[in-house]
Length: 171
Image 1: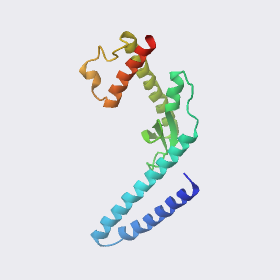
Image 2: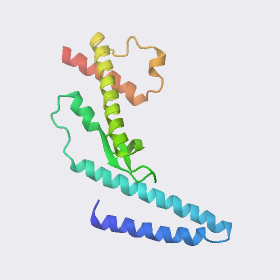
Image 3: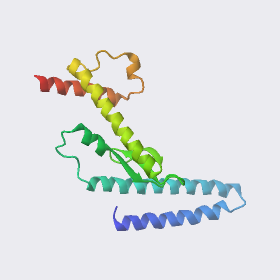
Image 4: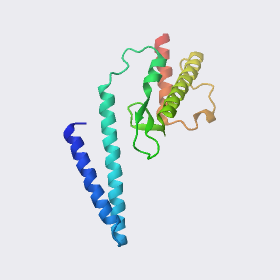
């Protein structure tokens, strides 16, 4: 995020704060509704600014290039970052590009949860590897309908894609 964009975001946040309190202190309920709208606009501005800063931060970091180790990929996927979404907890665990917060807590708790998320990621990789090695062309063979509950369409297609890649590699 550029210096100018940050300056604009902070100025807008200040103006929204001024507007919010002038309407929130009013004795008219119509002003209270305007105060709620200003608060919602402020919250959206904060979230957009955080997302832009995190996206730029992750873009500047070097990707895990040429990484053959699934453990290194898992470790790089889950990060502990500062968070301002909670007034009590100042850190969060984010996945991937940093836009999805998985856990908010103290820094020590977040580091512990990041290790647990990475472990779960590795467990999933192990399960997928064992299932695809049993049936390289169809990794979903042997799964019941209950195994698909909670999976998104993207995850199901990823399973199918992983099976196709393994089939190509084995031939």
